[in-house]
Image (cartoon, rainbow, N blue to C red):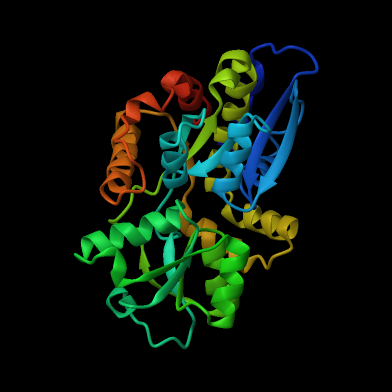
Length: 312
């Protein structure tokens, strides 16, 4: 509570003035930024309008951002890399750090598959260019396998869920909250997580024109998001209960997810740039991107001070 009060004082006591009636169009994924910000109470008295748009995964969110339908949003490092390599107008302005247990390859409770080694020749559902795709590639590489050693079915989360439930794929490489939903509600098993394989980064990204024209709004939004995530670390039980009601999902699901995720907002620093470069290099080695990007050129460090202060 003290942490939130301090963060709140920082947020609202030093808030930059923004033009009246401006709107920040924000892309979100299921149960993510908007949910934690509402639970933490940091969306009160916002001096501009936030227009929320929810997407089932990062790829359609990034398509909307590229088209100018939204100005900022949250995505994983893998789809961000994919978008940047395609020339999308996007820069990472804040990093989201968390443990890597919630990015995993799942199999049904009664599946004979016990480890990644058992997935040779099997069909795995995931989204093209997603963090689930990233995990598969990293695992293949670590085990010295070729891409042809598994079959990847590229599906959106809703379609992947159907295919997985019906048994038309053997496994599902996915992320939270889908992982916890499957574990808690359907007793799926994680045969591998991204621990030791991928950086486990997500990013708050923005269009360059929004960084230029709506800097005050973006700075304030990131401060509020940082404070909300700081609050959630100290209030896992209450946040899980609120999240469960908001999403109409049993509290045990977010409790499972949030208690192990330890999600926090981090500034773009040398460590973040190095981790993003490792994702770029992985995608380049596998031919998913045709040119090797410089991570330092697709991030914006100018919001770092606001993040650091808001996270106190």
